[in-house]
Image (cartoon, rainbow, N blue to C red):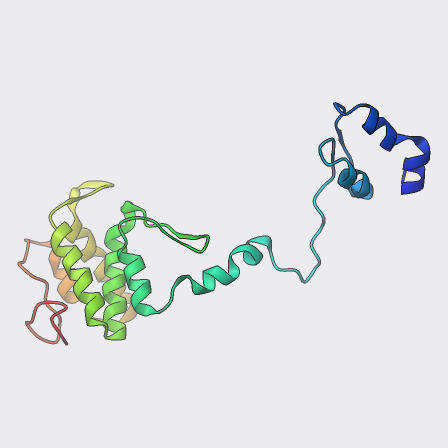
Length: 187
């Protein structure tokens, strides 16, 4: 049966009413039947219009655009120890990429001239520097940060050499390239 009239005259709808335990899968031509008997009849989902955005964009697009409010906020998200949830959107902060995120945050701070963000990154580096990295127990946190800093510095031409020097023996404080002042103590 290929139309509503045939479906009604042949008694299909009545059979679903009489036998509520019966289940059926139908093609998209029987969407009306699936709508009427949603617990019993399954039809494929409606095809989106050709110019319709994907459902993820519809659901999360607007909150995603508001998720990062400004550069400082992005830097803090990169430094987060745990996942961050805002307006139904998540920022995942897995521990296995924490050294890379710290290097990115420092790079962002230097690129934007955000001394508060840089101080926050340095504080985290000081607190975690001598800890082993979760996925590489033979490597210290500061060494992993140094490795990522070398890569990011080379790729962006932003000076992260003071962080890159952390791979050797433990210095007291990383310093910025422009002076011997402690990193984050002003530029």
